Amino acid sequence: MAKENQFVEQIADINADFPQWYTDVVLKTKLVDYGPVKGTMVIRPYGYAIWENIQNEMNARFKKRGVENAYFPLLIPMSYFTKEAEHVEGFAPEVAVVTHAGGEELSEPLAIRPTSETIIGTMMAKWVQSYRDLPLKVNQWCNVMRWEKTTRPFLRTSEFLWQEGHTAHASQQEAEEETLAMLEIYKEFAENCLAIPVLTGRKTEKEKFAGAVATYTIEAMMRDGKSLQSGTSHYLGQNFATAFDIKYLGNEGVLQTAYTTSWGVSTRLIGAVIMTHGDERGLVLPPVVAPIQCVIVPIAARKGGVIEACEALKAELEAAGVRVTLDNTDNSPGWKFNEWEMKGVPVRIELGPRDIEAGKMLCARRDTLEKQEMPLSGAADSVKELLATVQKDMLEAARKRRDERIIYADDMAGILAGVEAGKFVKAGWCGCRKCEDKIKEETAATARVFAEGETTEKCAVCGEKAAHVIVYARAY
RNA sequence: UGAGGCGUAGCGCAGCUUGGUAGCGCGUUUGGUUAGGGACCAAAAGGUCGUGGGUUCAAGUCCCGUCGCCUCAACCA
Image (cartoon, rainbow, N blue to C red; front, side, top):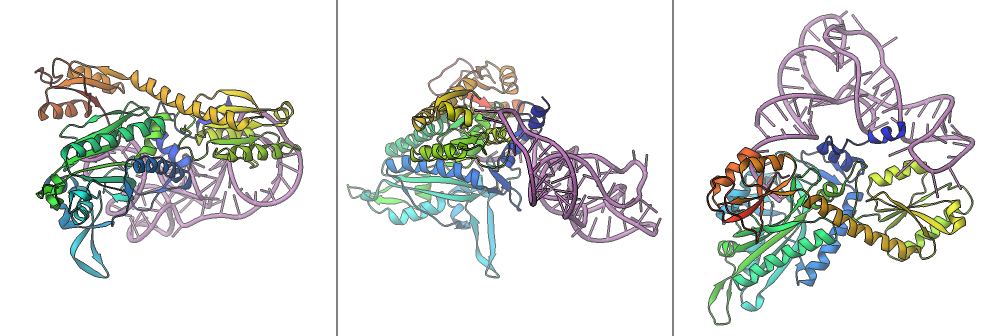
């Protein structure tokens, strides 16, 4: 018991102090460290490896849709931002600006990109001349900077990594389809790779991207019941195409304005993984993106044959494509168990003289903490199967946790009670801005997403006829 | 930007009220022992107390400024 307490002291209690738990976990598992400039973070190798796995999975999906990767400059002339009125208004407060370079004041200040619609729009205008140039689909993996007042590793930092896809199309219908197709890719990725169930749908006017016609989101529920906007896909209509002059000659010989989209996910997804699956012992990483999928802990490592058996097992798993590590350090087995659990490794194998003698290994899964003996022969197949099971079960467990915490409310009191209990609350909305603002004022919850296809009688605020059902929640 | 908390060894902290030799735990290093949920013994190294100024014979401790971090609130992926 004393030892158990000693362990508990290493990270804050997830139930008692979730924010502190989060900070403890990201630092102690070496996902990140703080940078010297406020709001900046160093993504350490263990954290970056998750990002690389996310990139690989995403790139495969993008390329299947004909999206090509490219890179656009970090610095954007300030004048570009003023071309789209809503866009500049939305982003102006958080743009960092370079005013001096080469020892002189610049003739035009340069924005450090907070997002790249303006510069990509400018380039698209050059590249798009004919209907034959469409659709144009590019994506970039890059850093962006938004000078946020309060920050937290992965969830909100001044500089963060993301991908931003930008497409231009000949017709409204095609652009809208692209917007929804990308949303669907994000949903499928979140569920199948990150094991995070998400609500998808459109954002209200108040919550949409500055300059978009419509913003669609994937919203995930964190352990504390708060919502995290985990990815967005924007239908930009002709707003940017008009502002940046993206025009093409149609096949009837008439000059037309294109329709554009943009969509992105960021390193915030790593925060979503941490806060969706984490438990009192630390991280729980889904196998698809876990940097290390399986750790082998030798028992009585100095006894003859143990290390050799562990190395043989490691080689076998590696050959089968499992990301595997052998913990050959001097720490005690118990110490290693706790350490690798904190780091969220999905499967641990304990292998000692007793097991080797019996031709077995002891497999412990991180998500349920269950241990089971398995034969050493055919280990690669059984570990891969176990990883797949963990992946699937993590999604189901997260879905169950979430669904139990989605409720309906008829009035403001019901919404307030719900969000205070860490729930997503569905309620009717008349559609007016005044009612939306009032909910935020009184409950600190915001409209996360339209619950599409659902209907109800009355607006929870004013009692007038409800035009929509909205999912309300407090959000990160 | 508003409110609160915190900066002392790599990490976590005590010491501050009432000024007087820089402490503890973990980790690290060295040697030895160690079998399945954070092992044990012995020895050692490790500090401009965030930073600038002030008060004082004397400041980690008191006063003023400043920087940073954490939490909450407002703004946002």
